[in-house]
Amino acid sequence: MTQVRINIDGHALDVPAGISVAAAIAQSQRPFRRSVSGHMRAPFCGMGICFECRVQIDGIAQQRSCMVSVRDGMQVVTDG
Amino acid sequence: MAKRYDIVIVGAGPAGLAAAEAALAQGARVAWLDAQSAAGGQVWRKDIRYGWPRQAARVITEVVNHPHATWMPQTQVIAAEQNALLLQNEREGWRITYGSLILATGARELLLPFPGWTLPGITGAGGLQALVKQGWPLDGRRVVIAGSGPLLLAAAVTAKRHGAHVLGIYEQASDAAVHGFARKLWRWPGKALQAAVLRSQLAGIPYHCGSIVTRALGEHALERIEIDGPHGTQRIECDQLAIGYGLVPNVELAQMLGCAMKQEGAHPCVDVDTSQRTSVTNIYAAGELCGIGGRDCAWLEGRIAGLVAAGADIDASLLRQQRHARTFAAALREHFKLDPYIHDLAQPDTLICRCEDVPLQALKDYDDARSAKLATRCGMGACQGRICGTALAELGLFPRSGQRPPLFPARLASLGELASSSETEGSFS
Ligand SMILES: Cc1cc2nc3c(=O)[nH]c(=O)nc-3n(C[C@H](O)[C@H](O)[C@H](O)COP(=O)(O)OP(=O)(O)OC[C@H]3O[C@@H](n4cnc5c(N)ncnc54)[C@H](O)[C@@H]3O)c2cc1C
Ligand code: FES
Image (cartoon, rainbow over all chains, first blue to last red; front, side, top):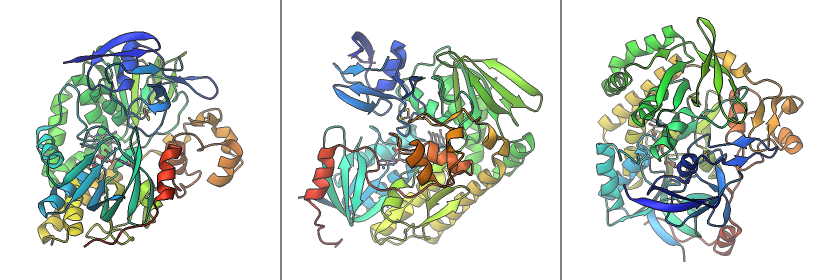
């Protein structure tokens, strides 16, 4: 499987092309986001409905990481 | 100027695919869009390791490469007006117009609150399946699958295939109900075969009926769960809990377009006639959003909608097959009915609205969703009440109300596009 290199919270990571950003974050064992009262949250519905998997992708905030596939050079920022 | 298509199809699951295939064969120019990056919908979601199932791969490739088809992946409808839709992808917003519109937006999982349900490590059952197919790591992880319905089996198969250590499947329906269902399966040979295949793939994974996950515990992430079953309470250490209580139709877009609804249990679904016509002229609906009916039903209804929208005749045997497929859904509903105990799992401090962190006790003083929402922000977050609103309706607290645009948070630039081009072109010829 071809690999792409992405960056999560400043850490470079090689992941298989085509996986979701959510899967890449899980592989990196980084946290996803904090809720409005500060609790840790992670993907819940897996299909774009719940918005629990939101992160910043290439400068755009509030992207659902379960709905976006990794791209070479992608910059991901979590709440962690 | 907005581009115009004979038929626009929203949703690329079995229903949308069948509609596209049928309409293209009639010579229609078809635009076809889905919020996901690959076609296939829920049941045929592309697996990063194993690809699409063979039959799905054939149809998807055919439709995507058809000269009269325009495939728009990762595209969402964010607003609609007469014969026109405003679409948005990651980069831009644009407007298209249509002669006929076929809605095939499918279903989502019914996800219900219980103490600890917001902990990282807990997902829907189909939700985990979806994540795993797109690369979510499960190798060696201890996974419990729970909730209700045949989707639990499919989720367990996918998890196992991707290296998970599946500790067990916990189904809320009683042993008698599940066996009663299995005894009826011969009436739908396709389903019986599917069930037999699943069973053989699940060899070695225990399946427990009459079992309900009552609580999840952990410091920062899931560590263990408690399950109430026929033999009392049990505690299980696990890394991942995949829990879903069946499916709920995605009707928000149809509601926004003004299509009449009917009720299926606590949740609305789109009301259609035998030709899959909704109450709105030139708008059709097919598949799960017309009531949960499963893959075969979605396929047949998509085919009917595609043919009718393209002006072709439908033969009686197609309609007969569709009716038969629908009776399967009725049997499912009857046998996997939720135990009322599940409606009472949430405690006063259990969060109901995960976006705004609103606990159950904050909602007790209100008797309609609107006043609760204004006072507590319940349902005002990013998911726009898709999780909490559906859960509250299921718990019998507040019914779901209609949607106003935008359906999903839209970028302002996209809304500007809608405002600046509100003329609609001539009708379908
Ligand atoms: C998470 C999940 C997993 C499932 N797994 C299985 C399984 O393994 N086996 C099985 O037999 N059944 C499974 N099902 C049941 C499934 O509902 C049916 O089998 C079948 O997929 C229904 O087909 P459909 O075409 O009606 O809808 P779907 O397959 O749900 O397709 C609907 C499509 O519409 C898209 N969509 C929805 N709203 C919009 C919008 N506003 N804009 C753009 N696109 C939109 C969605 O992204 C989706 O791709 C699953 C259901 C869910 C929710
Ligand atoms: S996990 Fe629910 S939107 Fe991504």
